Length: 452
Image (cartoon, rainbow, N blue to C red; front, side, top):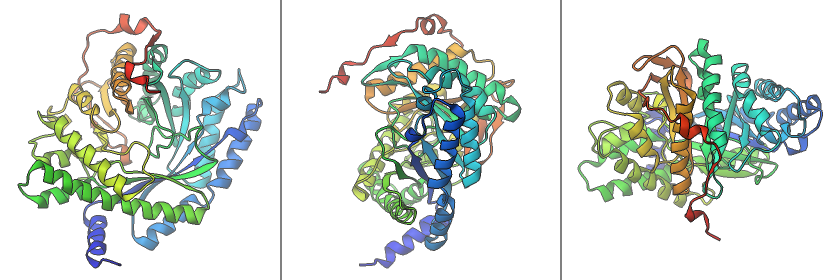
């Protein structure tokens, strides 16, 4: 039975509270494009993407008009490109990135993710070539996103990869210094990366996925905040209940769009990622939800507990709304992409150390954080190692997306535009981890990895 109250409530969520579908992402397998001739491989890649995703933007735009539900981004994820690079040793791997960029422009998507390597247990042929090419690839393209998985609960942490990625992150920022170091904003380093993530910069089409799949990322921090603002002074368990009910409704909207897109495109529906993904727009902030729960400012004492409550309630509500929940699913805390986080960082209420504690209970990790331009590569590697350790030990996905602000110091700002937002350069500890990082090797998998 159609419930008029629910319809009106959903309309209000969209019009007044920033409810949107953050992304409809088509995952595309490129395994059949592997070729020892890189030029032949690139032709196959371009032809396949432009064929499979030819109507992607058109269909999403039509769904948006039909249902009045904003779809902010249309994206593509592909098989980790390092796997294709392995077949053509010695070739210029950047050609793959340029081909993906050409395909992105042809079909009109916002981003393509999958310029990626999975090296949690060591380097396979193609991995090193792709990793070394990341700075150049991201500096020469606009729509390409890159990710590298350096650890997992089952494998431990590849510290050789961690050491290498500190330099790669810094070099990527340097090559795009004239554009506020935006290249580093399109590069993320993971532990326990998932194969069906629709969000950038970490999306790739895992080898366990089908030929093609539709994955949806929903968003609704503004909706949750409005619900809590109307709740008044109720106990914490009632706050959790209201968040769960709201997450259920938000996920139902995502399920509707997912089914419709899958039907129209003739591509199977994969998952709904029910992450609360904020934007720089006022009223669309995870930090403001935490403050609505009762904190004076995000970053103060109690922030980690409030975020744990929020993340758990979102997951419970979303799982009840769809049997195909996946991706990362929870609450994102990207500093430059969240109006409340930006404000808290500017006034000094939020530190990197507090953010690291928060990542133990939320969905991802240290995300979209501007750090001083003179931060050494080994310090960046150590930040990655710390975050990977949290993910490894807690059997969860964690990630690092930091942007060395070349030529800038603490308190100065970087601005990327769009959903990537802007924000202040945050202080980083200057104590050197150089000897630790230089050791290399692998941090063994924790005891909890032995689950069989």
